[in-house]
Amino acid sequence: MVQRLTYRKRHSYATKSNQHRIVKTPGGKLVYQSTKKRASGPKCPVTGKRIQGVMQLICT
Image 1 (cartoon, rainbow, N blue to C red):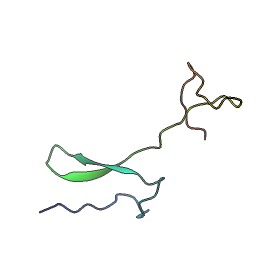
Image 2 (image 1 turned 30 degrees about the vertical axis):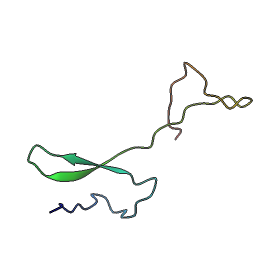
Image 3 (image 1 turned 135 degrees about the vertical axis):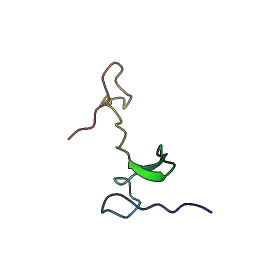
Image 4 (image 1 turned 60 degrees about the vertical axis):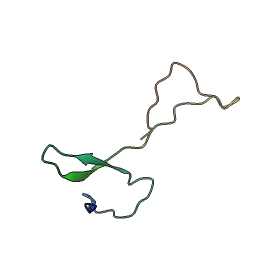
């Protein structure tokens, strides 16, 4: 039978800002591990292409 999982944080809806991965612990349990959003990186305002050589960072 499939093991049921619960979120470790309060936000219980599956939105873009509440992404999780299922990870198996050394004890054999399955738990949710929260993931961060991926950065898109800076783009050229004229062509819209990615600028090479500049790191992808999430603006805060």
